[in-house]
Image 1 (cartoon, rainbow, N blue to C red):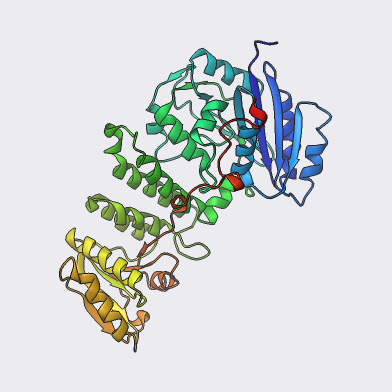
Image 2 (spheres, one colour):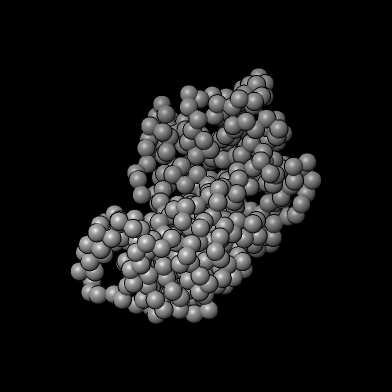
Length: 445
């Protein structure tokens, strides 16, 4: 028994009563490891806490409630901080472990001296019926996967849900655990960072079941724009790390375009082609790649194609760009700088700024200031007309992220490129909110 690996499984739940008991039972049925199960109830208002407490007769189970809602990431980081186990397995309250999941993955990590181990998955529906089995995308045999194979294979999409791997706990602490600043892709961010720096073990047999259902966080993240908000800055952040090998770093811009194109495709397939309940759409996601690509030709081609597939009037070449910036220094400077960049890459046919009556005295000096350092730019200023009267096929609208004017443009069939989307990774992480784990387990174990 002493030779068996120790594994801490951390399960986060908030109002997950429907599948929680099945998830817990599947964990406690694991054999071949010395197991501890840490359940973190993030202030559920349904029966989740009572269900979790019903398992505390098993001395392997600990249930912690509150004191705040720390969400999935905070729960995982608390568990990483508290455990002295050799290995760590994050778990979602609606997924199911199959027999041998922990033992086989921990054994593979030991065998190959790897930092983490994972494999393919079954995907099940709400009733537990098998929908499909994921391809063994890293091979049909259990093996060692050297860096940077995983990093390369996990772009542009995350192939591994949070419940998939078993990881060495000390490696997780060193990596900073799960980043709650990007709550819709903290697992993907972590896999990319680990995939750059640590070899992994691939276990070819599917040993867990990921449940797909309408109430899942994944389903919600498509509908509310969470993936579009979190995944692009995550990839930029990962590629900006100083230890990214030069042979990979040079592909960062293309990888970013691939990510945005994949996000746009999946959003379009789910009907997210217009800005509405969320400030992101399939078109604005590609617009971000246009904004950030140093070589714009490929990104512009993809953008125009996406606009057409979204039912908007797609430009067939250089476009008339129109903007209606507020008379603030930040907004005017950002708009003019973007217009200049698009013009320098040959994508503009004309550049038009719209100004409301009575605003020209404030707007014109700001435009002049924005042109002073980088030279003149052929801009047309229209004073007075409503945006509705100016928008026409062949135009592209430039606007700040979240501006209601984007919806106006789309209603006229005009695609938009938005400026200044928030970067959730721009602020530091907070230990007091469990946004990263402690450097050593609590109690010094």
